[in-house]
Length: 494
Ligand code: ADP
Image 1 (cartoon, rainbow, N blue to C red):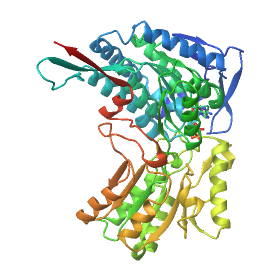
Image 2 (cartoon, rainbow, N blue to C red; image 1 turned 60 degrees about the vertical axis):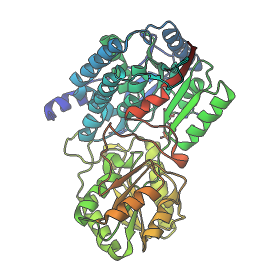
Image 3 (cartoon, rainbow, N blue to C red; image 1 turned 180 degrees about the vertical axis):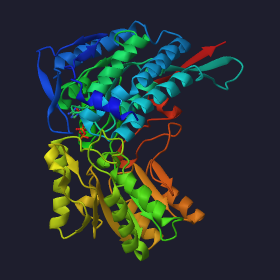
Image 4 (spheres, helix red, strand yellow; image 1 turned 45 degrees about the vertical axis):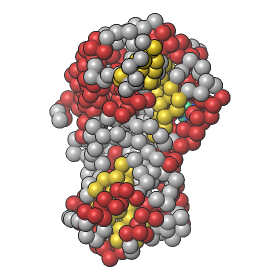
């Protein structure tokens, strides 16, 4: 990574951001703006439009018109593919600029941000672009006197509400299949991570995406997001974020037009280490990164470590050594392994979760405090807490920070009970050399993804989605198209 170029980019002023509605940049209807605070130093990076309900509705109207007149869905899949591939290329060509802008806004370490944000978004758009002209309808196996055809049709206008931890990666998981399928989109980025999504939306226009097909409205969730969720003209809502907001979106759907609602709501993912793990040093290293990278602000973060009692102390020592050796701080230094927490509010939430554990008598093995306060930024030390009880808040609630709750177990059965003992079911991992045990655990753990002898790092070819209160529906893989394509039957008497 070119350190000199990063230094130049980090010093560049950032222009005030505006919505992108119907192919045009515009201010909020009442002219209001909100500050964009950089978590690197707590300073104002720029401003962005503070969207109103009217802005959200204008974007929905544009998306509705663009869908209904067929300017996008009526193109051949091959034509849509060409535009999406061009878009992916434009994002890649500007990847470092986009990555640095994103880091200045959300604090992720640049090494990870570069790969996980622009590069991954471009790869996702390519994947779905390349797939769309290879998906076919079906001819049903009826008798000779009828013909049953199963068409796949785009669902229409999609409302996409996305979070701040990986705005481009998660945004592209929704935009890729939605746009490839022929849907039009109203995108609501998070309050603290809007700039890069706005930038790639501009690049989409440059690539030839017709105006109105992708609209981006910035501002507050309870105003802009809620207006999208309540709209009678949005056909499907796709969301990644908190359970509280997810519930509101389902209620909004029930109150309005019963739009489909697909939720990805995070987790409290168990990372289960048996004494017979093939390589405990590797397990410690990967497990530490599985919770501490991006300062734990990862939906699938392995935030509960379930460790077999016989290796508990030794394994915790290994983990602490990895955590303490991590290079922390300036997210724009390519050597940094964990950058800033996204916002002051988020840092306060994390510190309060740790304070509660401390007050309950749990042991903070390492970390537990804010670090680098002299920068003005929001940095938190990787934190390991032992002695956590199964019913502690730290064992049940998502912290979304670099905080690992460690719980010992004695038997496989007990590990499964603890693993399944939360409301969530997003991710899990099992470290063992015993193949049968690995398969048993995969079957019995209730989660959307169970890793074996690794944590994280799955690619686009496999689906990601949760069970229980981690949500429904899947991002990634060809299964993601299910959210954006409806089945329609033609039943024809011959
Ligand atoms: P987090 O706690 O991770 O910030 P949120 O669920 O609050 O999770 O935010 C995820 C996304 O949901 C953001 O884009 C945010 O603006 C949006 N959002 C927050 N509240 C609402 C709401 N009441 N209606 C619709 N969207 C919302």
